[in-house]
Amino acid sequence: MTRLKPLLFALGLFSTAALAAPLKIGTTAAFAPPLEVAVQEAKAAGVDVEIVEFSDWIAPNTSLANHDIDANYYQHIPFLENAKRTAGYDLVAVAPGIINNVGLYSKKYRTLAEVPKGARVAIANDAINGGRGLLLLEKAGFITLKPGVGYHATLADITGNPRDIQIVELEAVQLARSLDDVDVAQGYPHYLRLAKTIDPNQALLFDGLDHPEYVIQFVARPDNKDDPRLAKLIDVYQHSPKVRAALDQAHGTLYQPGWKD
Image (cartoon, rainbow, N blue to C red; front, side):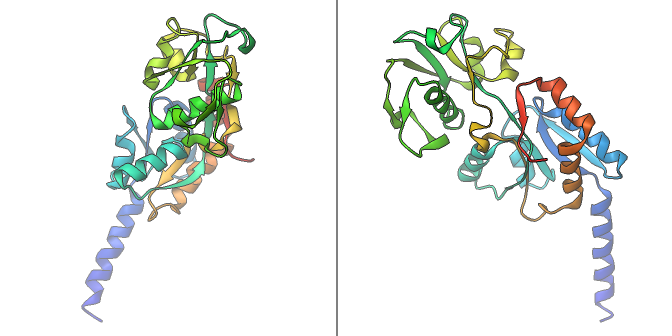
């Protein structure tokens, strides 16, 4: 028994040191400002949280899997599933955040009805965002998809194209700048604001909560998904009036809470 005491003492010191370290949560620029307010609110409640901002969409999951951070907030379920499948990460969604509306935009037409047959329509060329674009085209009545295919949809899943639209696939970040070259384009409000090509509020159609799998998630590893500090931060993010005001300032009316109050 006496030999165990030094080990138990060391483990106790390790546990105390781990708890003393701040909770590190990774994010990207599109989601950072409201999250910073949540961090300030959490600190006021006694929870030490540190934001680690990344400039790409790969590093937040790599850092989380490598234990460099404790959680991240920047991805929806299709993105997470793809990361787990392609990189083998063992990560889990812990709680929902917001969903950013994605829309169909046009500089040439003001309504869907005005879009002519044979129109050129741009969507994202990757599996994650392209599926969302195809679901938008189906909602607009431009195409029909195989029943039940959902966000896994690809061009091969199109079963009808009554308006003979020509689908142009582009990188998601290029869609905002494609509006001068196509009739309609899938658009992300954040990139439209940066590109200043069109008012992000002036979509012909938004998807909103039609597909809740696109709600941005707080993600952690299985070993720390029940960390009470993360639970507190999530509670603050979802229920603090100051955070809600920051979300309104950052996203205007182009987002919706993905949780139920």
